[in-house]
Amino acid sequence: MLQQTQVKTVLPYFKIFLLHFPSLESLSRTNERKVLKLWEGLGYYRRARNLLATAKILVKKNNSKLPKKIIDIKKLPGIGDYTANALLAYIHNQPTIAIDGNVKRVFSRILNKSENKIDFNKLIENNKKFLFRTTRHSDFVEAIMEFGALICKPKQPECFKCNIKTTCEYFKSDKKFKKSKRTPLKEKNYNVFCYIDKQKKKIALTKKHDLGFLDKFYLPPIKEATIKNKIKNWNFHSSFKNFISNKKLNINLYYKFSSKLPLQLQWFSLKRNNEFIPSFTKKVFKQILDIN
Ligand code: SF4
Image (cartoon, rainbow, N blue to C red; front, side, top):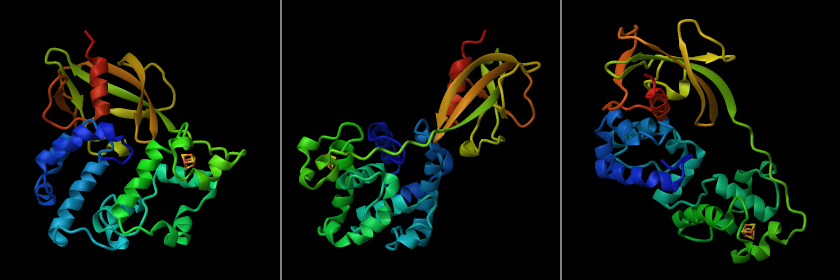
């Protein structure tokens, strides 16, 4: 849940999730629909699917235990370097560091070097003896991340409170390194087409679309567009921006009233749904609720 998402956003979801699935076994016995419903609003739904698939694999094939080798952990669905290292430290107390944005920033400041000039894996490997002097590896990996989040913050680090300032090159130097520029978000334009049953307050959705990152989720028909232009037989409603994963979507919303359901689409209530609906679709619902 915490991948790409802040702790304060995750907390209420996490508590409810644990009430439903207090153990790996209970999670492994459920289905995707239930997991997605509890994840609704958190985004990055592939995480939920991968978590469920991993729980099923571990319970079925690994006696409900997490493997102890990084190579085996990385074979589990959706687990890359970062998560594998975090799990090794948290669960097996192994000496390792999960390199996230906070950790990169801390190291790059200590060395007073831009992040893209550092090979973090090599740096950790070469400084193993110094870094892993503790036996509390699980606490250590968490501590570095927290240190980055609370003290060596992205903007205005709290250097005067910092207990490693005397060895920090960034703090000591008059010539502080310049941060590398962020890569701009990928931007794409889409036309979204809403068939609305005005009387029953319903909208037609489909799972058949080309939006890979919302694969297998219900959306109104959607098509990539080059420019915003008038579309025959459709009413233009509005344009809005939506951010999903690391993408910026420029959406042009079109609608038409229809009580006949087009092929491959399903009616959904604009107000109440037991089915999982991604936030993007909910945003479309909100936009078109005012149509009379
Ligand atoms: S002295 Fe400042 S820049 Fe250096 S590690 Fe501490 S908080 Fe970060």
